[in-house]
Length: 64
Image (cartoon, rainbow, N blue to C red; front, side, top):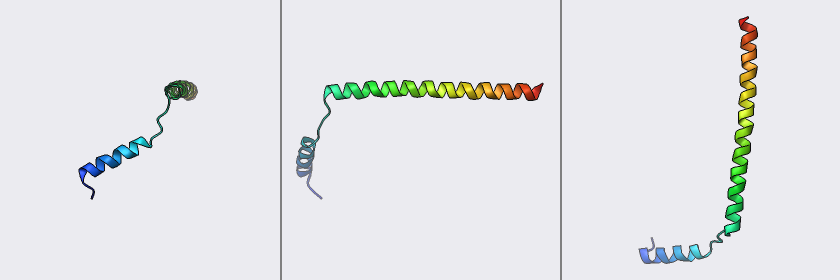
């Protein structure tokens, strides 16, 4: 096991190898995530509404 000073030195070396995203990349991917989350929520809302309407119709037909 390496001593703490060696470990911290190795961590700093590894951190220097990281390629960080640019501000523009972060903003673009964040906007894409919000758009995809919105589209997914609309899709699942519509599917839920369709299932609810279909089940209500079936229950109304059976109950009559």
